[in-house]
Length: 370
Image 1 (cartoon, rainbow, N blue to C red):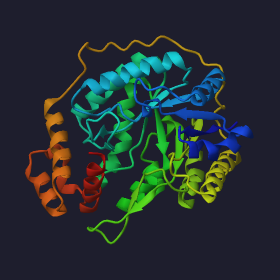
Image 2: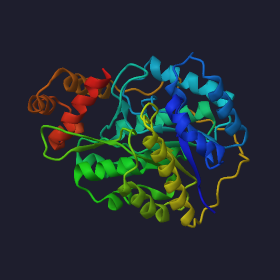
Image 3: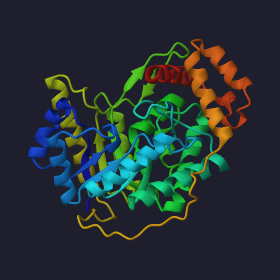
């Protein structure tokens, strides 16, 4: 049997127009919906509610968050609001599971920012586990985390697999293996992609993401930086990674195609969208899996993690994260920025290992989302 193949649903008109032929032909097995992309209190378009309800009734809807800020040292009002929104969502729709991103958000604005990595230590691990338990208590669903595309150093990408595995242990969680994120890291740090994939707990992979992205030119390197922007066609290298990774991910149940709305501007883009989806489905269908395909009936059991009333926080981590964000935002010169980061006592982050071209990329991202 094979995993279900679906799309990460976007509410923009160009996306729906491109995906319509796939819906009409019944090729979309499952929908992944990022419920926190619509601001809390805003109404969903009627067509969106109808579509989500239809897949929900059939047991073919999965939830994906992007703004929980799992590894932020501070617990603030935004995270509390996020959990309240989640509570509403899981009552409204029959989600099979809920997932989030590794890292912490780079902006205090609830609907801005990009996730950045944190050092792997007892403090960050304890905070992440606390956040995941609260997420699962609210959702009463299986919980997963997606690997991050961005890193400052080779060390960060090499330790992410172990970090994710330990984060997931208390909630018996699973991993979303995003193959374009892997390809970004492979290119940006000159690491073999398959070797990097094998550093993750592949027995925990329940979902795979496939997408495209873009190239960024930086002053500090002759090579371009690969960005996970979800705004272009899926590269052939990522399709090849899917072929290579599937045999190692024996428990995968879902393969999700991602493309942002407002990026499908021409007829050629629409045709490419359909072509990319069909190519994913062809690859998945050609590989026989040991695991059974998901069933539409879902069995639930009560989940009750005993967590303190007050969420775990760490003031030192909070100050370090804020210092990094402020430093990346306030400066234009990369060398000066690196010097400031290295002279500040944030030794757990090991800024001496950070590459200048990824620091420059982070400076651009921070300013974009400020």
